[in-house]
Amino acid sequence: MKKNLVIFSGAGVSAESGLKTFRDTGGLWEEFRIEDVATPEAWMKDQSLVTQFYNLRRKQVMDAQPNDAHKILAQLESKFNVQIITQNIDDLHERAGSKHVLHLHGEIMKVRSTVDPKLVYQAKHWEVKLGDNCEKGSQLRPHIVWFGEMVPEMDHAILIAEKADMFIVIGTSLNVYPAAGILNYAPATTPKWLIDPGDFSLDYVTNLKHIKKVASEGMKEFYKEILK
Image (cartoon, rainbow, N blue to C red):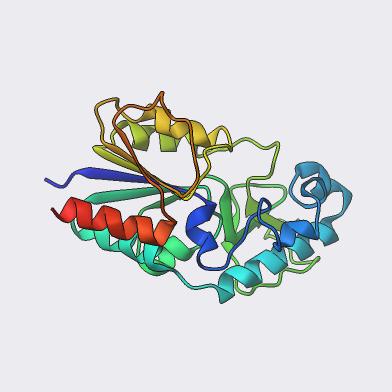
């Protein structure tokens, strides 16, 4: 029987594909304030600006390609029951071949109704325009969990973490809550790996090995380790 390998991935995985976050220099977030483009209040204030911002992000994602970290994670499905929980809104895990991906913060390649959140659609193009409406006649918004909104998939993610036989945290600073707390739900006896070049104080986490490398190089090291 295959073991359950749970992956918790963050922006560091996508960064190697050229997708930067608001914490990086030279990224889209330097041109926009979070308060102006990534909150429910921003949407109420200026739908045009918010739509423009996510159009730019969507185009970046469509131009990006999965990197070695994404590809190795997909390859691991031949050896383990792999479940990826990701903070990333891009589709690079799926495009690399991963079949079980839970997006905590939404998906940039999807849009949804502003009056009925259950009406979710695949974006057919990078550009969404004002006047693009759902079947109920309301403007389509990005299928993204904005700052200040609930994270609807948290309970699902916790259930996955609780069943982990192995747990990898990759490419995240573990600073964005509530998502960062998912690691705490993995069983104490479960072997855990943190793949990130940064320095972290995680003394409270049991059975943790820190591979201080970027996502692609760290995943190569992890892959060699488990093959032994």
